[in-house]
Amino acid sequence: MTDGERRWPRTEADQAFAEAIELAIEERAAYPDGASFIDAEQPYAGKAIARAAAEGRPVVLCSADGARQILTPSEPAAT
Image 1 (cartoon, rainbow, N blue to C red):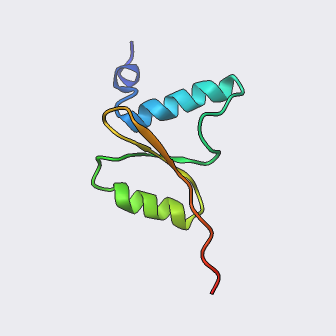
Image 2 (cartoon, rainbow, N blue to C red):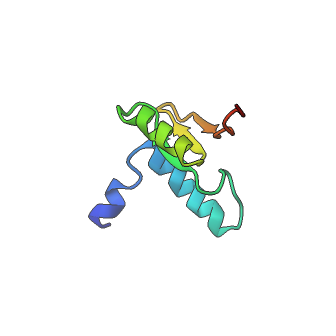
Image 3 (spheres, rainbow, N blue to C red):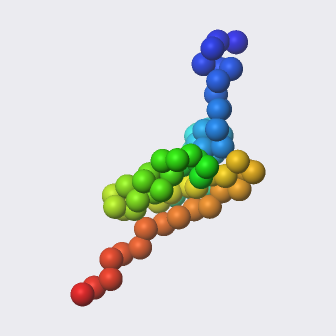
């Protein structure tokens, strides 16, 4: 086992991303294309969610308890 194998996956977001890759290999999708995988408990979570929304990308918000929420950006309101 290499050092990289011992450290992966390290976080809930890493685990969700690894699962998404495995499903994609099987031509199945659990999450929207282009999604950002973000750990909910990290101090940068709010900024990362805002950045993804500004770029129009969905977010898979991953909690330490294993819960995952898919956040999708909405279209800006017409003025």
